[in-house]
Image 1 (cartoon, rainbow, N blue to C red):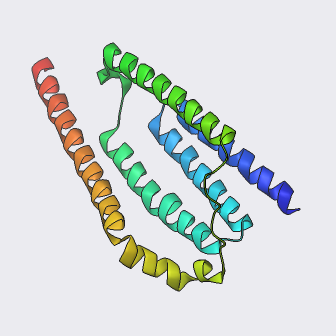
Image 2: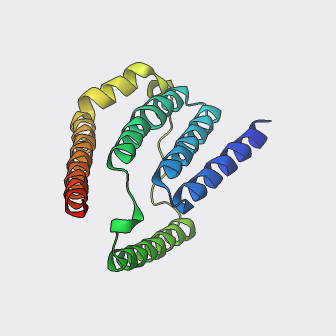
Length: 175
């Protein structure tokens, strides 16, 4: 039964990820990304990692998606302002990234790992251990991620305000 649920959650996550990147409207893409995050939480729960599953729901599907939805709704992106040159560059960059990912994945599958992974005991499954890792060992990485999210939100607000000024100026000129 666990194997069947694993494949259901994996297919659900893969389908949601493909739909998220194929939608033209950013709000719909963000909602499908949240569904993908929830499917990943289900996979973590099936792999007997309940803490990581809960963190996936709280952090990724909760806090990060609220921030993404807030920014998307704040700037109200439209395709009218995007120039064809920028779209062409994005497609080239995306194709290059896909080729690079395919090469890395094929090397990873073809070459066996150089070192055996260490055995994981109950020590690594406790909430206390995870808390120590986040607040001591990886505290700087954790704080940098927060600063990066804050910078993204501030940039989106600034971009949204610039668009508002441009819209107001064009409305004044037309009237």
